[in-house]
Image (cartoon, rainbow, N blue to C red; front, top):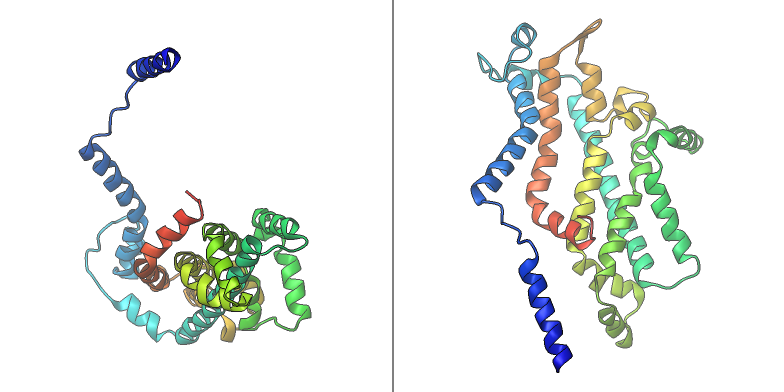
Length: 293
């Protein structure tokens, strides 16, 4: 009892001597958050302001933050541009293939790596981690050669195929699957449920936040991708929106139609912003559930 009392006294003394952390005042914290939000939104605001200005005004004062005369002519010319509807449709098709592939492939791979025992499991997960560390510039030549050999050059399938199973999506699903109790799956197995039924009826409904996370990330990667569609697409019929806008904004030799380009940038950003607004709650839950803080 004497030793226990001495230990308690020592602990109390240590707590008293330890420096106390003062909480950050709320006005200072909110002010810092508002400042960070403004700095983040400044480029978007400048693009929006530029899309509402005429080309002559942009050239005369490129750094202006507010338009002197608001005009929607850039958006009207954008939607009247030949091939714009085709570019938009191509981007939607490619993004749909990439998102569907990531949801199916990453969910299945993440479930297997987290909840199933098989030979080479650690090796497979190590390969996923290694693939995350390889930059695109190191493999895009090989990917292009394979795409050509498969006869998928200048096709939407060839543009979408390399992104249908991103290593980051597999990693996110695997980490989230680790947080699902094994007892829940074991109970389903005892009741006679097979692995496919467990996967579709139990695992996927519980993995909504992770699925929303990889949906946003894969859609963003596909929708904004420029280099790979530029390499694979060899005609305007298969151009995606970023590539098509870059091609059609060339008004003359070495002269860019910046108004058209900025209006196109707003159109490209809107679907991503809307998707994030609708899924932001699940996105935050998915990131926190995988431990990626």
